[in-house]
Amino acid sequence: TSPCWATPCAGSTASQKSSLSAVHGACRSHVNTRAVSVSLAANRRMLSGFPPGGADSGAGSSSGELPSTPLDSADTALRQSLLTRATLRESVGGKEGLLDETKASLQRQVAAEAGLSEHADPAARQADVVAVEKEEPETPLIALLKERMRMGPMPVSEYMKLAMSHPEHGYYTSKGFTGIFGQRGDFTTAPEISQMFGEIIAVWVVWTWQTLGCPKKVQLIELGPGRGTMMADMLRASARFRPFLDALSVHMVDSSEQLQEIQRKRLSTGSKKDERTVKHDGTGVTIHWHNALSEVTASKPPPHRVSRIPRL
Image 1 (cartoon, one colour):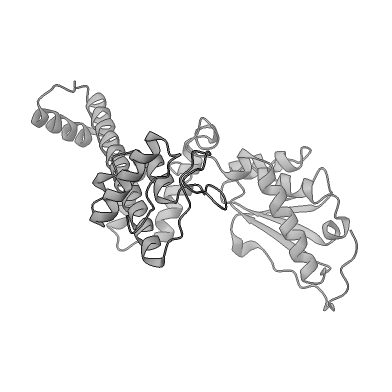
Image 2 (image 1 turned 30 degrees about the horizontal axis):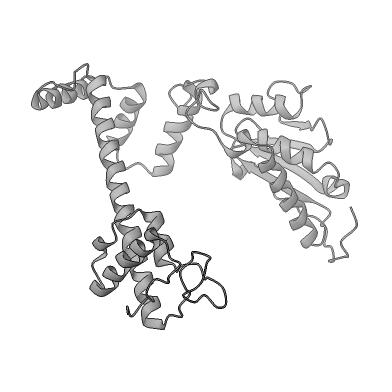
């Protein structure tokens, strides 16, 4: 008999006997899993143990199942090793296939952008791609960055400020916001996908406020609020926690004047252009706008003792 599995019982089907025979061959080799020439699903079934045929599954069992046989630690380790090898072999094969497909797709894309067919001479195709890259015009922002770097080292913070917020050539000032956010833009964020994101954050904020002992004043500061979607969802979800709202002031920090205006209209429809402080439509919470975090003044509430959490 095999050191790993018992021999097939009289009630075993032909397919079960065949499968068991294949596993016996793999066990005898101990390392050669090529003998198991079945799919990964079949490998998992055989190598994770056959279904037990009941408390007493002898040779006269009519259930068609193979008998359950206790395994020692060495047999169990071998079984797990075979399963791991089979899984790894198919996983690596799938990954290599995906990489080959991706590489081929990128090559087709480069050829299409260069206006060449896939059957063109490879050397000529590569030369044309390089020529196309060299002919790409220099943008005003790149010219501006080069001019700045000729003056000396430039901190990353200054580079990011120019690239993102330059009045004429910055990412958030030159593309128009329909080209940045949403389905037609470059990216989207969790609050724009589902209101649940802002609502869950609101619950956490209220819980944190309660954990701190319900201070009389609390500032909620959002950096880069986008279109104000998350703050709108948070304030709506917080509307039932009146004691928290009475202590709350909101501060929106954004370097883009255009985005600030979008946020104001989202949170306070009756607000005026360039207004720095407004009242939220639904809750009456005071909302302030700032161009930088350094403009936010930390509130100094009077000393308070940790009290019992009120029922909201």
